[in-house]
Image 1 (cartoon, helix red, strand yellow):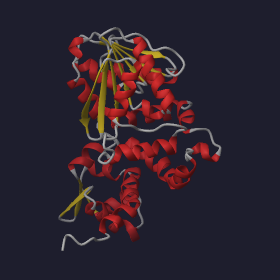
Image 2 (tube, helix red, strand yellow; image 1 turned 180 degrees about the vertical axis):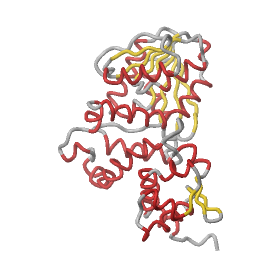
Image 3 (cartoon, helix red, strand yellow; image 1 turned 45 degrees about the vertical axis):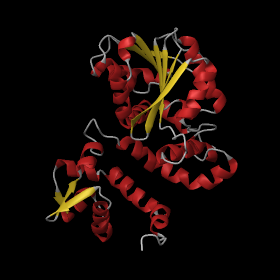
Image 4 (cartoon, helix red, strand yellow; image 1 turned 45 degrees about the horizontal axis):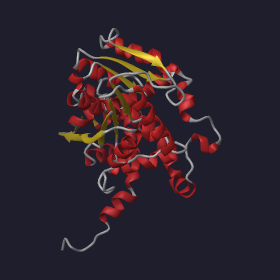
Length: 337
């Protein structure tokens, strides 16, 4: 009877916020960090996390059913994935981006219908408050936490770019919108002949420099405090832009691509990576939903296909372009001047 329609998938997606909030609350309360220390039974785990007895049993077992915990002989354990990626004490922790989703985006996505009707952001600016990024950049501690979260989200793609792009053909690079600096670090670690520069707003500088120094790369990877929307880009053999273009409207996207073209020598390369929507616009769910998130968060940002990006590079003057899947939802487009 498999050809008969059922409402199962509709209900799963329609009520998907139940599962999402269960996971986000577990991250917020440190469930996975606690279980990374050692497995615990229901009573011990409930008491250590300070949960009421009414719902704790269902909560933990829901996480088991969702595949985020395992239960064996009365003890709860992390799965391999949650132990690696959701233990705050590990460098592989990527829960920072999910913590932000829990504290901010979960509520703002309630305004999606309004955003779809008006084309306007639905975050702090909708209520007349200071925009999130201005608030974050004004607070060094919050900024450091946010940039570390971006590193956790981007590291798999950063490592893939470092491993697969033909860096042997080049001597220098500039990473535009470098954040904490993980892409620059991964490239420099994998290719000792390269020197690089991270480009971001001045507030990012100390965080970038501490991160680079901790990796032993202070002599090869520097920081340039530049507002890349206003100033020209510095010259380099390769310019990279990761999770940058989707923040802006089409005019600004084209402007940034044009700035990269102007800064590159003949034979130089622009590397753009993003959670690019597949060219058929039907497969990369994360990329499509990320584009809706840009509606929630920005005045004009949107995600795009590799074909879109290659077109912008060609229009800017790049003579050869190519696209490559990286890892998960991320892909990169390369343009050669």
